[in-house]
Amino acid sequence: MSLLERLNDDMKQAMKNKEKDRLSVIRMVKASLQNEAIKLGTKELSEDTELTVLSRELKQRKDSLHEFDKAGREDLVEKLRTEISIVELYMPKQLSEEELSVIVKETIAEVGAASKADMGKVMAAIMPKVKGKADGSLVNKFVQQHLS
Image (cartoon, rainbow, N blue to C red; front, side, top):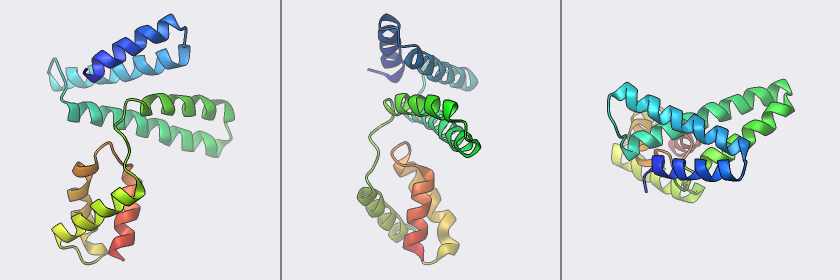
């Protein structure tokens, strides 16, 4: 089942169950996917592109959550936490810290990185491997740890 089919099924279920928050988030994600398809001029998106769109949606919400949290807007923070949990349902299973650490070590060895000066090379090599399965800031932190 493609992501769009899954979103359509979940949207129908959310309508039946009168889950307004869930319905709203699903519609936003669906709209983002459709906008991306229009932008690329295709009818269907590849899984990789769908994952990119989902990651972007999740990142936007996490960034907003951080800003609202700093501003003390608890009303908006709760709403965003709910949205994040809904979007995360459509993301692939996240890598554990141990799995991510192993991938970082392997990639550093592949690239032949020795110092923090090689950080860009390592990040460029590792991000396609963990796309959608790990947060970029977490990957960055692990790479810095292993290069120092």
